[in-house]
Image 1 (cartoon, rainbow, N blue to C red):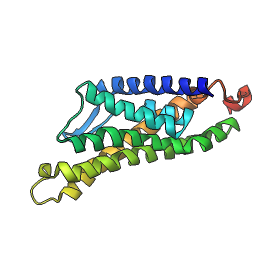
Image 2: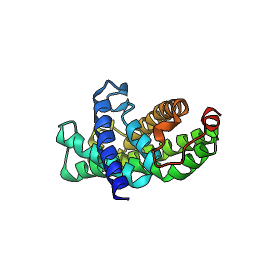
Image 3: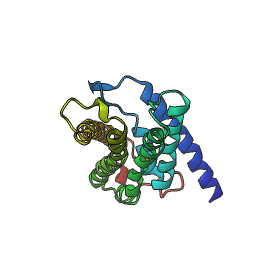
Length: 199
């Protein structure tokens, strides 16, 4: 058990570092405040491999790395806590779907597993951007166009980003895992038969 926990923590650190690398790559810019990237994919992969706790920790590490590397946009300490500690950690909520994803793959039901993966990606994305929405209302209301409420402004900006990121990451996750199901399987998991993997 201790060895498994160590493996989980090593993977959490590695995938958090991988996420920060992807975050430095060019993203799809829809507007000055709306951009879409694949940076959440490593955290989602970890969520499907280990579940909630490990992916929650990895998301938290990713947020801390953003601050440590000077890639964070910080207005106040509370805003930084919400957007880089809480929001990034909440991507780990995708890990709540770990068991059905693993169960469907173990039983050779790849299409069902892909459906759960899409649901998990949207859940993790929503959990993250809910906190960005809260921070937007509290700290960035002054950026709203004249006549628009901070709530609506934050909802539109973060809602559009969340949907775009969730769709993009869902497509990538489905492609990666349908092509290589073993990507989310650990050596301690039951081995798949070649027939089940091919189905």
